[in-house]
Length: 461
Image (tube, rainbow, N blue to C red; front, top):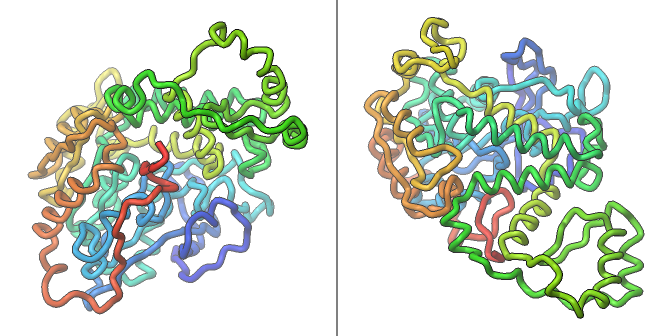
């Protein structure tokens, strides 16, 4: 099996258009852990910087569930000359994972056997499948070894699997952030609750819907995203940010003639700071026409709060950039994560199918020493105790804790602290990369945090 570079996809995927300057490779056939073979498997990726003479300065960055290969979008303040992801020292690459809507093989990809998108028939993939397929692309690029792998959440799971799925010594160091050695029952349960939101949408149709942003099960996917946001943030974060404040004031209501013209289709979405973003237009218009009758008795209506508007905003934003089948697929991929799976004897598991400490030590003993494990102190999805365990099992690893009120998403918001931590560890573990003059390129500079499409930086809230 080999990867062909400079591949040009021949299908129109509206989500791919969200990522500028993305590159593609084509893996002729990828054998998956589930036993199926993925033929003509596209792999999307972005790169920054150039190779050094030895081609041993590759820095692999792994994105989270709803992320993309566009590191500049979601970790931009860490990217550039003199920063953690130093474009004058490293050849930086971020692959889009299998099952994501942003260009790599997924339910949106054309099945070569049928000529139609895979849809719900897209085969199950795991984090290990991602690593093995991405390694083929690195081989095609001529990478001799990987200086470091860095990733958070699902990306942190990948960071753990890179040294386990590649030859010994191929990866020199790893930085797993806000992640764990296996996906907990807590994480699995939250993921199932989100999937049930999608299944409950009548437009889901067992996954055989028309896969476009406007025709997919928007209501279910939006609800799933709202549930997910509560696991990504913290009680302290929401209380401090919203309290019991009412939502922003509404824009003046449209004239009746405009309302009528905007209410012709049930699939239209009414956008309003306090919206219920996925009501049908007919219902929204009916309510609008009744506003006058209600004004005299506003106190009889239930109050609305800024926090509600924020969740609904997140739902609306998400359905425009993500696909429901892909969301289901990637949440299941996280559920499969367990570094000991199929690597230790069954006798090393207890009655709850949990591996013993001995099993984790055995599996992780060959991971490069001095890994940097990063935790977020208020993370409710991947609790800090999970990173304590991870740091214990990894050889001579160190644990750093981000002081943040933003919960799990702290790893996408605490740029300054992360930048310092990662720079320090990379300089310690990859000294050859920093030797000699900087590489002769026009370094990418990111001077300000911008609103992110795939990350969590938002100026409007």
